[in-house]
Image 1 (cartoon, rainbow, N blue to C red):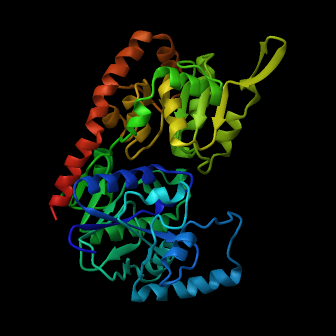
Image 2 (cartoon, helix red, strand yellow; image 1 turned 135 degrees about the vertical axis):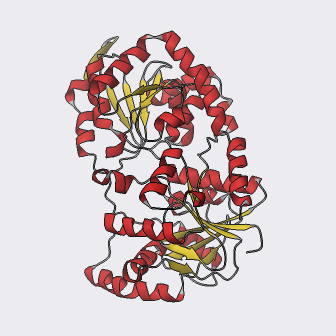
Image 3 (spheres, one colour; image 1 turned 120 degrees about the vertical axis):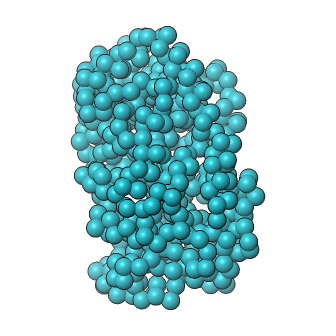
Length: 440
């Protein structure tokens, strides 16, 4: 790895269900590439890799893993004993063939990266090492990068170069009841990163203040770069008729004829209150909830499936069964963009976000936004969204009624949303990133 090479840790980018951190990692690497840096990617895999066989390792990196597959008690004990000591000598990445043997959309994930490296069970080994020794596991790199940048907190560090870590938010510490993280481990890991990192990057002023105050990090070592909204030009160029056709064919929806929430269904997203507020609003427009299953969401899913949202419609001689609250699983990017563009409004009353990417994506696509007064969301949305108290069902319901009925309000929010979204374009993001990397 020559001068000007940045080694990115990109574990979230390899997740099949997509995450906000994955979007961040891809956008970050693409921006670095446009700035002239050589971006390499590093991630963990479940399969045992074979040194010297890059083509086979490419296959193993993308191998399907049965979600029901779990280690035996003996395997767990052996790993618990072995992993910390394996990491003592350093974790050695293995280079994969890139775009050689594996076909389909999976290897396209690695397009922004010049080279791809993997380590078998990298995070598990690093975590075991950190839990035992209280130190970040070292990466044993054959070629030293100019900089190592982890796109989320990981128990890893590279020798002989600056180590930069992105901390998106402190949700597991600030709202421990909303996540399933090992809080003791996460607390200690962030403390060690705060103490040893050459620099910390975050994505909002709210998160920056949290990191400085609660991790006791010198504010000069924490930079807010915000995030970028980088929607493919081919999707932005699609006409209204094409979007209307997609909505009708794929979802049975009409432009402007539904509300949308998208994101993982998890406690911080506030889906239960959103559904209750939607019911209280009396709206006859469907509420579409799109995204992955997340966690701790049994109550949310019960509300979404509640029979009170079941309607029957006569269509000619056929009685059709329809739901007012509709759940869609994880969608391809093209379909999600069509859903956003066609919505009467995005409803995103989250109780905590490090940034809140759906807010700016919706604005960039010309969709009015209702979001919350909590965490980073007011600073990200500016004056271009209708803000609500996320803990008040009445407040959310009132906003739903208002934005449904008031066409002038929607038009004003759309106009201001386009202006606000320009603050988070790829070009604006590159300027901020260039200043950050230029400081090393």
